[in-house]
Amino acid sequence: MSSATPTPAAPPARRLPLAGVLRLGRPSEIWFKPALSVVAAIAPPALILSALGRPGLVMYAMAGSLCALYAHNRPYAARAGVLAWVVLGMLGGVAVALVAASLTGSAVVLVTVGALLAAAQKVLCDATLVGPPGNVVLTFVSSASLFAPQTLGQVPGHLALTAATGAWAWLVCMAPALVRPHGPERRATAAALKAAAVYADTGGTGEGHARARAAGYAAVQAARQSLLSTGAPSRRALERLVVRAEVALAAPTEADAERLRVWAASLRGTGPVPQAGPADAAADELLGVDAARPLSARLGPLTPLAVRTALGCALAGHASLALGIGRPYWALVTAASLYQANLTLTWSRTVQRVVGNVVGVLVFLAVVPLAHLGPVALVLCCLAFSFGAEVLISRNYWLGSVCVTPMALLITEFAGHQEPGALMTERVVDTAVGALVGFAAALAVTDRRAGARVERALTAADRAREHAARLLAGPDPGTAALESARRGLAVALAELRATADAAAGEWWQRALPQERVVLAEQSGHRTLAATARRQGLLPDRDPATETEDARP
View (spheres, rainbow, N blue to C red):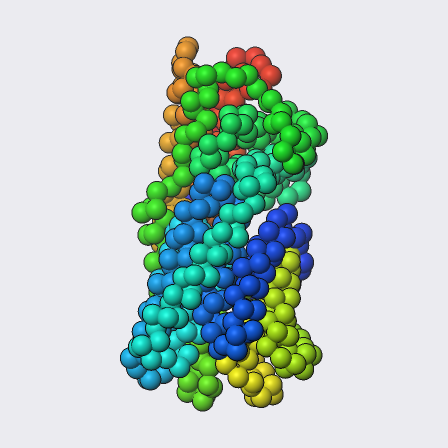
């Protein structure tokens, strides 16, 4: 191989994909948890308010109830804190919106406030990794609240209702802890084992191996984070299983995929956790090391995303106003829902959003006669669509939008019956405006630093590999040092792949060092395998072979 530094090639011509954008995937394994939780959180307050003849307050009650969609993948100790912050975030967004609505009737000002709120919600949700549904629900509620008729004297009462239903949603989401208190961390560990088994099936070189390996490391990291926030008695046994999954990712040809799947299956229910390794006290101390990036490190790369969101939402809302649409927040929310990690993913979400909303409008036309039978029928229709959205959205975003759209249209009915034809027309126009203007903002605001982040990730991966190789070359590296080096290298390689994938979907940037990324991954995974073998986690080889594996 030549030692000359390769000259970067010109960036390849990029195309926005259409094939596969609407393809259905496998449903989430826990789809029923947010689906049932949101129904249980919405139903009591909505039905009570309808029975009391106050359907106009249902919107404020639903604001708190929708917090039940969050944090179902978190252990209960962590879930309690995350949900509390989600409720406070929802309450803060609604408070800003209601106060703004009570102080000014200027739609231009309200749209601007909504755009700034949407950008803040996007950044905070992405930086804290709060997970699906992310910022979209928060933005939908706060944006709708901006255009709800409001006086300053009504704000405290409406906020109190939101806070009360948010507390009820918190209780609904925490209730399963009484039955299976350690279910989330067991599921996260099982997901890591199954992802490792999928990669092991490829042998590290088969079709789709790169994607399977990236998914495996993401699942392992998610499992580690889950276990860090639990005090389960079986935590150590679960951590050893996560180690076995990580080792399988390092050496797929030597992994027993079937055994990994058997371990994963045994974590269902509340039975004993299988023992996958020796109960070594020194090793146990190492299993809880947190390798996640700090919050401050996650905020920097989100700056272009924040600017895209603020600009796109503001322009979409103002464009809707210019067209004379009565609900510019629909265009604003459409734009806010588009922005993903890079431009290619944003384009895919744009197509999904438009298709889902148009089909959803037709569904609304079919069910609106039923919803007009009375307040209770209206609540039941909203419950059915909220359940359906969670059932379907994990298969593909557009399919979930088919249920979200009629639910959003039906929510407007709580303030009084609307003319269906005009409502449907406004929704379609606002969807088109939000999608076109929002995507145009994504094109205009580029992420120029994506390539620099790849370079930094490459440097970090090279340093982690060199550190592990130096330890392997020594006579007695020490258990703690070797485990720390292996963990650090695994995290660095996972970060490199995630950073490279995100950067590959951006436009208007210099060519990425794809060849260097591939070489760094290949040498890094060889060193990972050698390190795991030195730790006794893999069958022994000839020392000369082990040393060769550690080299780049």
